[in-house]
Image (cartoon, rainbow, N blue to C red; front, top):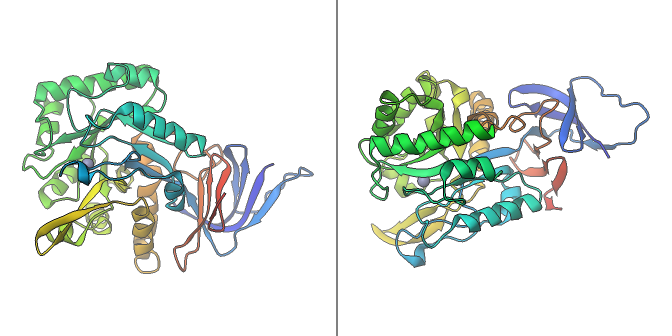
Length: 382
Ligand code: ZN
């Protein structure tokens, strides 16, 4: 039965004011500031007065099978449940292996992605991991893109990091060319999603790859750009030149003290520096490991939760109004555009019916729809 959502304040992600939104099957059929009349057809009417309606979050970096392991086996982080993604408003989680492609396998990630889909989410995945040669499902990066539908790119490939494979310009060119070819043949965007480490070279390798090849800049999508200032400034230039870049929302007091820029601050600064806001995204790195220190000693690891995205939105709601739309866009439309997901990240006729309803006073998420299916209703998982 079609669902008519009435009286919500709609962010498409730009503010549309109070609108009616009609869902039919897995899509949004109509968005109107007036009354939607569907004649005598039966439909479920849902009054969302006082609430905000926005697109479901597209989280371009998650580790749904867990991550970590850098400090030994005791530091492996746990899987993320479907319920946790729903409660965080993440309707399109994009899964990655991370550092470990030896004791963690792409086949397991594929299985987890398919589980999340079976439970109603629009989950996707990258092949590869930090390492090169990359982990693949079919033996070839481009074949994975063409033959395995949920694979939308390669990631997160580590550069400028002591844990990376220290790829040369030639190696990165070949790898990116394979992703580009796989994307071209499959009709997918095909991205090389880059884990940016603390290394001084930052995006230097990618600039040398672009200088010495015919590859397009939008192929390279760096994340963790807010981990240190030098990298952040390089990323702003990359975005100004036509690339996309991703800001990590999860952090710890220790990481902030060591030079991490808070996600909201990074977004504000990048926009103020002239970076086109529509090419900046925010991701959770959910399942990634966050080191915990006491008196300078490593005492354990915490796993980043997907809920940091809602937390980032809550941070600007009510206090930094000018950042509300840019933050919502960075959680929805922008990452969808970076990954070439035409139906995602928008509240518009024809888009996928992936929607969130939340209370503006408290920031509490009350309802989640994905592909027209109601996954959470008034705070209760369905
Ligand atoms: Zn990473």
